[in-house]
Image 1 (tube, rainbow, N blue to C red):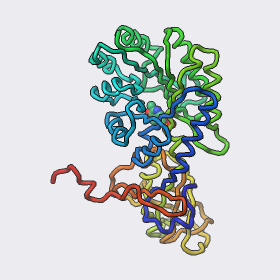
Image 2: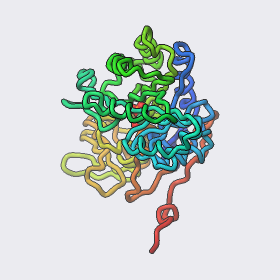
Image 3: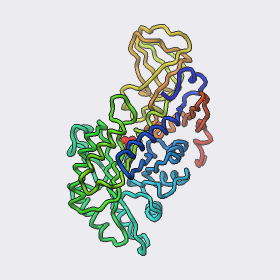
Length: 400
Ligand SMILES: *Cc1c(COP(=O)(O)O)cnc(C)c1O
């Protein structure tokens, strides 16, 4: 829990609240779990999951690398102060310039597209450079119990089954100035189970040994649970990687993880206020100054870790309460409370916990601009680490 009910009255809503101690704790606990089983391991903070500059700084100061997936995220990581050696560069949206720059400055670069293989020819030939490559993972084929839907294939990485992976490896091997030293096997599973990673490793090992790849690192990607009762722990994941790699030629590789959700969900809460209530069609329609765009931008969630702060002692409500957001879209409905629970009134507040991953990074500039972000201090004080965006920020670089 980032925020207590007493504190919440003083905040300007809608807003996010960050508990940086929780973020640090997630990072430290994951690193400790890895250190117990691996001599050499790295946590790459998934920048796309939450690119708030303050969080990037906390991640950097806690020893994380920045895991970036576009030339702009690469530039953002540099702006925050990450050393190029502490950047993991993934995804199809690398620019040629930043791709070559990253390789020449010893970043971890995982090849995702054919054009990147061509770009390698533009590196100066008088030196040796190290790169990695992403392998395509079809979850249904490897572990159908962990799959999203019937056919959980992937758009990313080179496929072994199609022959693309071998072809890419051969093309890279033919370049005398480049050494392939890393494998990247990120895939998010539906279940986030330990079993999934065991099966991924069991699938990948014979491919690597078959091609006699000599690796320095194995980047297993993200897709982990954060601290949640009853769910796999960081220690469970670390143990699974240790066991799966033991006895293989890759038992001593540097293990790279790229957690997004696991680090960023729990350190953030979101607070909004009830601004109006109407009564019709047998329901109570409660309007807030928050929006589902802020806490569930994919509109997939069925429920939230939510709490209420009432201005007065509430009566029980004999109708369902439809709690909606600030936008003028009918479907901006956050949740519906069943009849018989406490009545929401103007001035009451709703707190959403565990909302730091894939939320604020995806907030559209729709009707309401980016909301305030507070940092929660040790002694119940709150400081603003991002001011609410206004018209000035919105029209910047536009011409009218
Ligand atoms: C999105 C992403 C992550 C983070 O995934 P989570 O499921 O949030 O842990 C890690 N690596 C890559 C390559 C990604 O695209």
